[in-house]
Amino acid sequence: MAGFFSGSPKHEAPEPLEGPVVATITGGTILWFVLFLAQLPFYNWFDDHGHLWWLWTCLAGAGLGLIGIWYVRGREAALKRDEAAAQEPPSDAPPL
Image 1 (cartoon, rainbow, N blue to C red):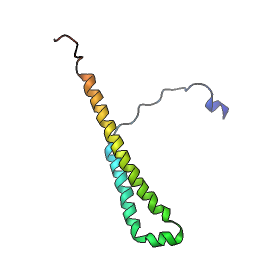
Image 2 (cartoon, helix red, strand yellow):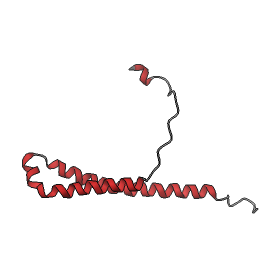
Image 3 (cartoon, rainbow, N blue to C red):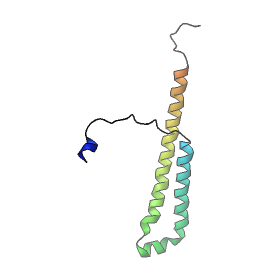
Image 4 (spheres, helix red, strand yellow):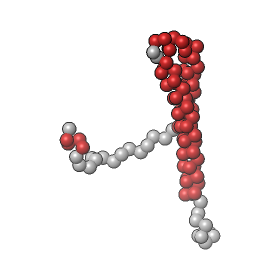
C-alpha cells in the first residue's frame, strides 16, 4: 500500500463532466422533499420503532438541496460571465 501514496500521478486528471447540473440538483432536492412528505403520515410508527431519524434525514436532504441549487446557479452564472468576458475584446485595444 505504500506504493499507492508515493510518487507523482502517472496520468493527467480527466476534465470535469458538465451537464444539466441545476436540473440534477433540483430533481434530487424535490425527491428528498417528496420522501419527507411520504413518510410524514407515519411519524408515530417511526417514533415507536426508533427510526425517526429517517424522516429528519429526508428533510435535511431537501434543505441541503436548496443550498445546492443556490450554489450551482451561482456557479453557472459565473461560468457564463467568464465565457462572455473572454469573448469580448479588451477595452484598451484599438478599434478594427
